[in-house]
Each structure stands twice: as C-alpha cells, then as structure tokens.
Image (cartoon, rainbow, N blue to C red; front, top):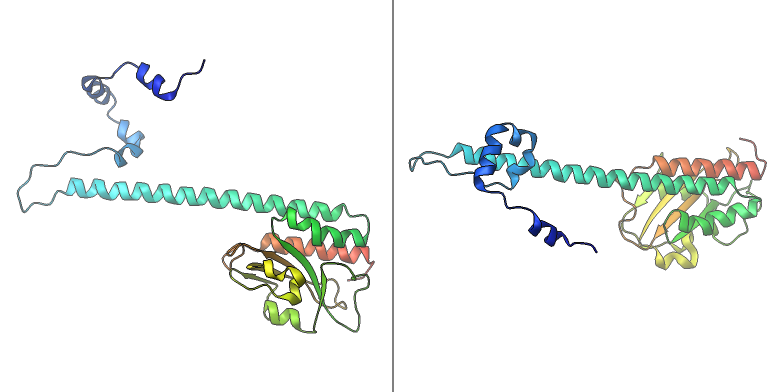
Length: 238
C-alpha cells in the first residue's frame, strides 16, 4: 500500500528552531553551498535611522533577482537544447528515409507524403522551374512547376532558405493544400548546374512554426541530401 507525500511528511519528526540554529552554526557555509534558499528566505530588517539605507536588504533583493534570472536562462537553454535535438532526430529520420527509397517514384512519394510525418509539418511539396533542360519523371502528386526565376524571387537573391513565421499559403507552391499553410520554409534545391532550380517547400498550419531566428543548418543538410538522391536516381552529372 503506497503512502501519499502528505502522509510521509506528517510522519517525519518535527525539527525545532534550536536544532536548525545548531545545525547552521556547525555548517557556516550552508547558504553558500545552497544559494537557492536566498530566494525564499526573508532576511531580518536592520535597525537603522530614518535616513539610513538598508544596504543588506538591497543586496539580497538584487541577489534574488540574479538567481531568478539565471534560473530563467537555464530553463530557456534547456528548452532550446531539447528542441534542437528533436529537430535533428526528425531531419536524420527524413534523410534515412531517402536512403531507403527503391525507385525515383518512391523517392517522390517519400518526400511529398512521408516527410509530412517525419518532419512534423502539414504539407511538403517539390517545386521546379520550367526549363529548356527539364528534369524528367517529375509528373507526380505534390510536385509543382514554377516560372523561370521564381526561386530567386521567392527565396531572395544570394539566399538558399526563406523561413516565414506568418504567411498565407501560396497555391503555386502548395496546390490544394495551400489553405492549410500559415507558416512555411522554402529551401532551394540545385540538382545539377544544367537542371532548373527547385524548392523543397514545407508548410505548417501553426503560425510561428518557422521563423527568421531559426537555425538553418539542418534544413540545408536535408536539401543537400535530397538533391544528391534525385541526381543519383536520375543518373545526372554534377
């Protein structure tokens, strides 16, 4: 039979103030070793004149604020670390899925269907500009064509990734699923020097899912792996 936390606490012997004082006298470094107690203990007020500032109270209040700031920063760092690890696991899972494809058609299916779950987004599409040297075999659901120069106009000159925190889904990029998109990531794809530029478009129904302050190393790695996979399956040269 388990005992509740309250019952366990009630069963503990009471500690008197004298015992606490005796312990602290024998352990003068206790508060130094446990600074978190400063934020919950109430120090005594010094008996001073009306015009004398209680510097001890001021310093303790400041120390409490610093301790709370450190705690908040630590929580933010841990949260960011967890999010980064989760993103890394998702991208690695997507790359492994690419490596397991059996045909080029299977690759397109993995990207436009399986990536949705693997990357925790709501829609994934591939987009390629029309060109005199088109990429054959791109007739598939979730694959869209763009006008020449569209990739540079969308992502920006000299850039490879665009992350939009708030946006209305573009039917040119996301087709019928555009109405789901409230935040997106557009990652440039360069299959070969001769092939037309492309985009891997990730869309989320959650505003803020992608944002400008977000790291892009993992998405760049994913786009590079995808470009290499397409080049391999279509037996294209660099």
